[in-house]
Length: 286
Ligand SMILES: [Fe+2]
Ligand SMILES: [Fe+2]
Image 1 (tube, rainbow, N blue to C red):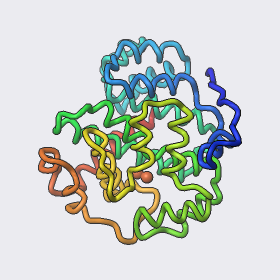
Image 2 (image 1 turned 90 degrees about the vertical axis):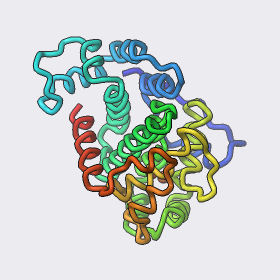
Image 3 (image 1 turned 45 degrees about the vertical axis):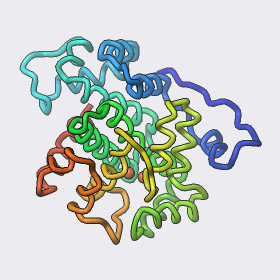
């Protein structure tokens, strides 16, 4: 797989920016291209398909998933195009990002990172689902959900021991978690996320999503506004990295979603959690 190299860190940059440049391995070029494609407003299936076809690791993962008994197509799938059409754009996006992240993290795919990842996919699934009801851009909502905690993935990769201590310490709510991260890692996951998205040159909208999704006074609009409640709901449904001691109830979190999405959620979170868990298992089998 081809890799992009980061530029040399500049001493004048703030600590948060330098941190990512200094310590993180480069992100796979194809994954960056895919993220940029998915973050755009005119993403088309054939474009993503061509990108996947150009990389053996991605092609193999897509074909393996299409032929997996979990997906259950009746005939053998032999081409990426055929697999992409049958799997649908939604699963294709999830698989591309999951494969990219797994190859990026290689041997350091620890249980903490696995939980970070499951949380992000759960958040993305909820954000996409609610975007559909509010006529927001659902592709953008999905990608935003996947990326919102990328700073935490980075912290847990670069400083696994310090991050394990953050998790051990626990937190009453998200603001305490950020405080713990700053104390034990020197930077919180929102600052780290902002830094990565900037370095990776992703569209500017993702800067706000990665850096402000725990702000109590966030003024995000459109699909971006769905990320904070989707993140909280993913936690409440059990797709969590740190179990907050003062977690909000399911009903209280639903109240943060705009109508009509708010009224479309099931009254009981268990069915929704089971559906999301099933989707994550399918994506992870690639
Ligand atoms: Fe977060
Ligand atoms: Fe989150």
